[in-house]
Length: 126
Length: 131
Image 1 (tube, each protein chain N blue to C red):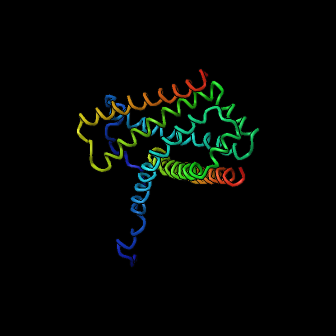
Image 2 (image 1 turned 45 degrees about the vertical axis):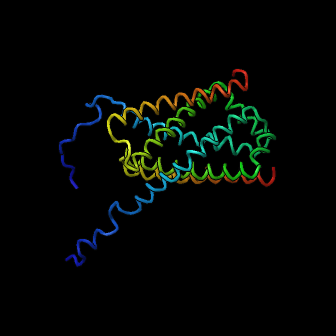
Image 3 (image 1 turned 135 degrees about the horizontal axis):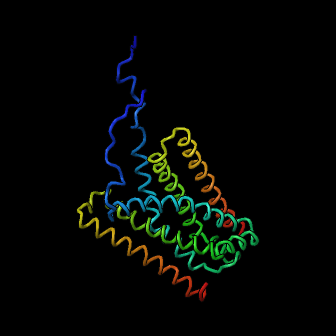
């Protein structure tokens, strides 16, 4: 005999968890990426042909370090959120889906962290 | 649960390709491509933290004909995803759903992203004097 009410049994099991949050942050990072990615492309074009010394001198400047770290955070957060939605839409084999979603989370975190660390190392040690 | 054979709704292949649907899937394709491209970005940026030799090697990889081809592709993917993303943001606030507006904004996105890609590489090549 099931003693729990139908509502009690299903509560927390549906898809309504944090979808709005996921959707919102995808948009917020998208808005942030509009000026940041334009700045990135402009900078890379301007830095074309720069050697290591010139590049690190440019990246070590306070404003450039701050913008690059902002770009990295928005980029990898947006990438993670976007790829998750694509995987959830197209991969229906449960095991493969879970493995791919985990890979996206870990790869985005590690890549993002690695990029931030690289910018900080260059900013602090030149 | 036993799988019941239910009739399926008409799927993608029975519809005529339209600018709206084609641009929609291109948004996802460029997004996935850019997502994979972040590995290249990570490699390039972290190489600078490793030192001059690693950075020179990364620059040489990017500067090879294959590297330039890939970067050219990523430039278009970025500008397309960026401009079509702005189109998406307008939809999110409820604007631009009329069919004529949809087609016009789609066309604008194509022209804009191609023009920005060409302009970016024209800038690069005018600075370096070719490849």
